[in-house]
Image 1 (cartoon, one colour):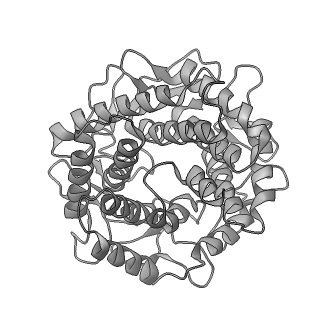
Image 2: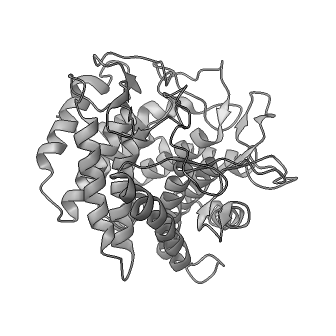
Length: 406
């Protein structure tokens, strides 16, 4: 079983991502910054978020790491000319990708929400700024979803629409709503907690209650500009790290947790949310876990539920832990046996007990691989998995940790 201080071990590993040039770098398997790549916005946001968690867990290096992250996100990554945040920075401080993506901007909201709750006074105003960009540039009132990607000047909008960005926007909106409530600022911004939760519900209704329900609880991820599903999208490159072909097992699990967190956060939640969460969880476990022989979750399946990409991603197992904990807390069934099974698998195969953190990818035989992910850039999923069993469904992780210290 996992050691009680595993959260702190993960946070120790994350400290290696701090860069003297500002922000955080992509960590290799040893926990060193891989300078052959650049500094992605989403990595910098996630590391700022985990530093906020570490700060509230009284992890020694996390407060300085949190300040470092907020500083980078409030200066280096900001596009002062057109607004928003650059997608990726080179080591010279210039953007290597100046597009503006809803996926990464959702993590900007999450980072500033968490930082503000963890005590960063600077992050409070930045959270409102991030919500304003999300509202003005990404939120589409007609579809009640977020669009995916703009060019730098917010002039040219890509025709692709995706569920991944919307899923993390749901996470970000719920975290922001809880942060505003915790900070006592729910009435001081144009983005009320009620509005943010309503938008999270609208996204979830479309993605889960309509699209996933009508597709046997396998979530269509890719759409055109009119929100018509593109079920063959990336069939020729099925193992894409962000836009894989078919049904993504880990997203079924992640949405199950988010649906229950949303249900717990609403004053008058619709009854379909827990029903959908249970159905998503059951489908993902049935078609994802050990379906090709060895233990572990496959990455993706086709639309008949047959495995396509057999590699095991660390984040999928982490989301299985979060989903099974949420199912149990919501009273939708006893998932303790599943939790024990997932943690035993993590201990046996995913956790690198020698060099730290989790292997990000295993092959079908549960040996470390790197066909989809290189190195160990991200402790976000694993760290949250260590905490969710002991936290309520609502509020979000960082406000819940902060409330427990009051």
